[in-house]
Image (cartoon, rainbow, N blue to C red; front, side):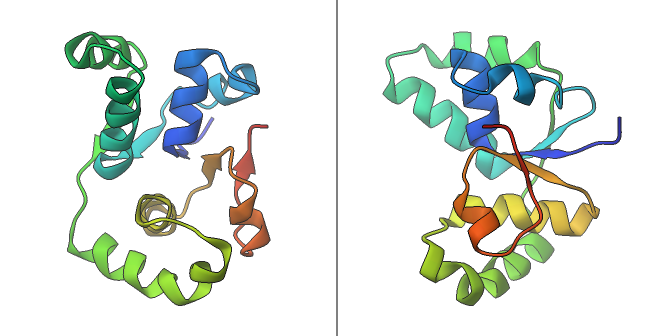
Length: 125
């Protein structure tokens, strides 16, 4: 399977065995995640009471490639704001979409608003 970009919601669903986790898990092999979305996953884990070091160790087993957020992605994420603001997409959402566009690959998310905003994404729930 070709590489996909995972949104934080996909990784969190796998970690916490949320609805759709089994479908999201199928995309893990060869997947990438933006460093911004990786940070979002870590923040949510800590917010939920998890230990940061243990969470990082757990995520290493996913073998995700963490892609640094760079200037090109920053520009593209900013360019997406006018299209996404009415749908409530966050900076992290736009970062994930920007990485998918840069890599010319699908993005996996659990957030249906991305489809409503007109993006061709893979929904896992």
